[in-house]
Image 1 (tube, rainbow, N blue to C red):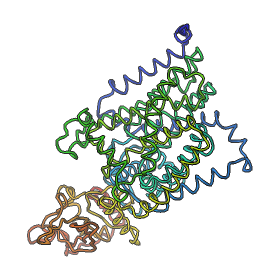
Image 2 (image 1 turned 45 degrees about the horizontal axis):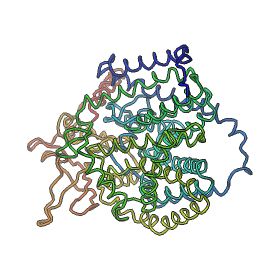
Image 3 (image 1 turned 120 degrees about the vertical axis):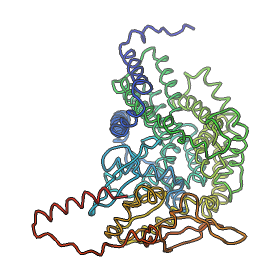
Image 4 (image 1 turned 135 degrees about the vertical axis):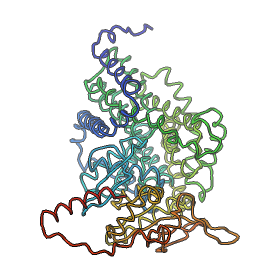
Length: 623
């Protein structure tokens, strides 16, 4: 067989422009811009880069799918499939309370969406205060988390008004979108009932329910993986510029959901090159040619890992000295098996999905190897699934070599969701190799039985999440916020971003007892806040019952506290909110109002001058 000639590609100016744009993006993203300037650039321009990529994606998606969408009629819809998706999504959403499940990730994402909404900058607010009825972000820091999820949340804020609960609405909607995409994938791979099987397998996954009712980016990551794969199948079928543009920009947005999601650019690139090779020409559009330049903010934001060694969080696992190493693989494989086959009370897994997926995985791998040798006759969805199987394999291998890639850890197990998506796709992909009707119906019965007998009770009890104290403390604080008729109080809390994201003035403990102590004393003297509260956690000695404040929460004896509310959210810990009564320096109270009476000037201009001076000083004193 004759090898395809490279001449059509080498003679195409657009190919050279694409390579030039890619080279320029590499230089700008990795070499030309200094570290500090890179962070400032992402802060100022990151929102607009994502907005432009998202707008180009929507335009291309409509160009390639719009005719089919316009042709849809209610009477032609598959009512049974719609009902299956609706029931599956409802099961995932009704058994857990909506709230922030993985606190640090989700609160940081919410804070970033807040700054994107208020002033279109990429910052997580660390200082924010209510100034005469208007909440203003005074200072922030660049977060390491990619931008697409907070960007979508900020658009929802723009449409519906800023509310922290908007992230739950977003994830709730994405749950149904994801199940719809899984249904479409199963239908294309193995028929109508296979789509229902895919929905049933995911509806019976408690870990998916846990994230569907949270404020994180895991649902969006799953949606974008499946959506990009299906758009890849469309491109393999239509092979025109609009389908290519939709496919490529979906991939660019997917790369900006989670840190490791950039690996999906590998199967996308391979699929595009395969189609070009089959066509004997480069299919390109102007948006795709300049697409690499719309990704330069991604490596620039990644500089945070160089500027802040703590960004890798190696300290969370004592003894870990490097983020990735082959030595982590055996232990991580053991933890993965413990997650997949752990007890329902301990792990939010689905035994049916684990067994079927791990049985199907080796058969799927053999199919991929077989098809790569002769892929041309296969249907477009099989072509896309084959290339994306490489992405699932690389993603799993990457996590197994990660120092914190332990799927049974309460914080890390959400990282297993793409792997479990790959297992479901493996099941759906191998079904046509068997007697399709019998196999699908039998597995559908098994999946439904597992859903009712094991998954629903597990989701209803959600015992697997009770050990995560930060999540329970966040829910406890949000209950307190909801009960307050006014939000004109100040909170001293090391998790100050939580309060600021709810438009409540807050400052961390180290600031309150350090550089901002005099400012807080000034604000208390002037009754700038209706109250000042302090959040602390106390550890309880099981032998003596003695309570000791957690490291980093102690304000010191100068801060006089009065317990306002406390609760044992977990054994041997007490979670407490106290009211700050006064701040002392020795025997002198710094927060007692000045008893001296000062004469009020009679001149109106002098009064206005003093008022402006006081307001300027007040703003400087805000925590």
